[in-house]
Length: 558
Image (cartoon, rainbow, N blue to C red; front, top):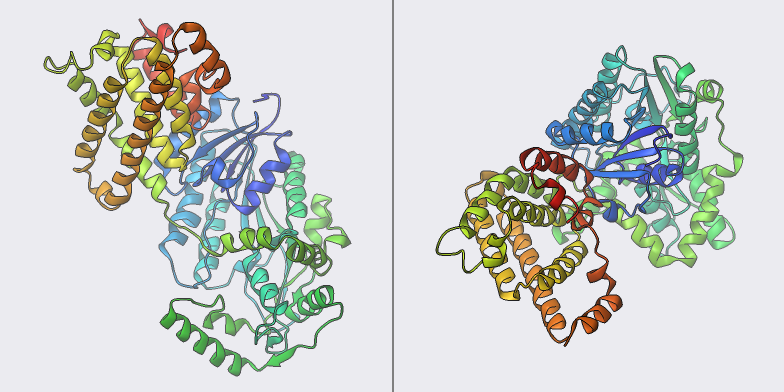
């Protein structure tokens, strides 16, 4: 990382806004990215200025190693808190309190340890009350007074930020609906998918078609966040800004623009009275429940028919010296969306349909937490096992190492398993297996000794996890993941040893490894994992250096 650059912690880094902020700013900042998904799953390219930690901000214990890692790489100047939960059920999901409220509290606590210059929080204009009266205008001073669960969670989070703002400067940013030229805003995607089709309801708009909100292009939002960071030192200790154009955009306006761009002329809409729309959606929902395919529209949405969220963002424009180009008005960007929709249908569908489903609790992170709780005990049990008198001959090469070195390799193997499950990536398993196979072959190991080690290691892991209550909740999925890891390691080891054994001499072996650079140029085995999970190896090296200082120089580059 370039330590001359300012450091920014980005929570929710794998989300729509987070990904685009990171990609736009990797050259400008040191980015400490926190997310439930791995960097690979999120589709964020690797960069020297990006350090990725796969954590759940709802659990503060997950954040402790993060603090150590951030401080080790120059510290953080800002926090951009984007992590949040929202679904379209309108039910009071536990995730609202867990992520939106407790998660915000945890990130604020994290900020206390880091001496940051500003905390930037992404709230939402949707937390403010919609109204049928066009004179009801949302400004920076409007309270987040809507009463549905998502809005309540955002109001609680904003209250927390106000309480912490005496400790460090804070900015609350209330966002309009964020989109880009591939759409990627679920309600708008559903509208376009319906209006620009031959479906029976393609011309129907609820009420008078006056339901309206505001939209902001992702590029304008990224510029706004950058503007806040650039002006941070002169901004108030606590400030609230609106990330939105002034005004509002109705369904009727969107429908007219979209159908004109798609069909060459605007289609005439059919306006359905609110009561008929409610009956229709209720019937569609009931049918969906019966056949197992629920429509996106929900009965609760009907109460927002012809309600408006009208915005006046003039204060934010003036205070931040920020503007939204006319070309980025949603009714003009629809042309770009529709061109992508027509010319890149598969990509368009994939990008949008993946956003229709939200996963609140990820198996991978919970599994990782379970595995990490037992790491030390399991590794020690494995070391004790192979050094038992009756097993020493079966593991003669392993036991020929210094015991601390064997523990180091066993710990790294365990961490590889946990990391591969956490980030849902088995490519690193193959890379590690190939690299370690070459080293072991050169050291005189036989494949069956390594396989024996892996089989017994799996047995010890599973027997220990059987006693963990948390592991029982996802026992089948977790045990299956561990078994797949072991099988993949075994298959790669056996295949690699067979390949090496076919070579008649050292020259042929060297020729093979030149053709297969994974073997010869694997470099530091630690790097295979630490590229993906920096915080673990920061702490692991520290612990190993303290515990085994007499051999640390020997193993740190192995």
